[in-house]
Length: 261
Image (cartoon, one colour):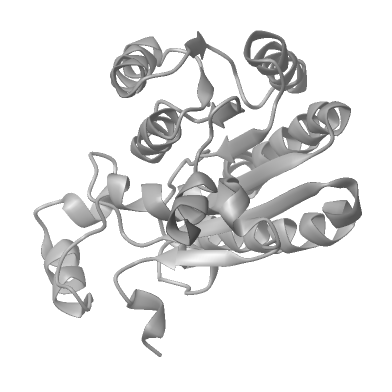
């Protein structure tokens, strides 16, 4: 009986989930994991022009079961973000889960970055997550609370050369998560994060056939990259009632990378 009750805590039946950045590999993995657990999902884009990727994500989520709605939006425009949160609540009977899989990698020497690069990288990787959290919470409060998970990177805690602004933005997401968790705890909204290791996807510089990727693989404890679907278990835990007293935390899914000094 005890085991059965524990398993039931991971069920998302009757829950409405919004995944922002569903065109990315992490967003796709999140959509499948939540749909498999019984949630209805709204798949929202980070930027327009990603319809093909959204449709591929929707196909996978539908195969996993549950209601799936696709919403093309620009996550840099607050009116779009606000309308998406309202749509999710309307179509799914409430907004109970928000997953921010927003990401826009940026690499290059620090001395070559200008103010426009700073604005662009911080907006794509930090400001837009802040807006999504704020608009999602606005809707969640109407339904008594919910769970927000911000997908970030181990670069939130480990700087690397030629990615200073990207690392800065990811670190901002981590502390944004902690501060919002404290502020919204008594309002019924939990806020947590997942720090992904170097990902095995098409956009990762670690997947290039060059000296950097070879050096990185030698450095990684498991000598391999993180598969996006390996984030699903941690995500399911953080959005389910199994983690009902967990907020302001970050789970590293990195194959032990953060254990290194």
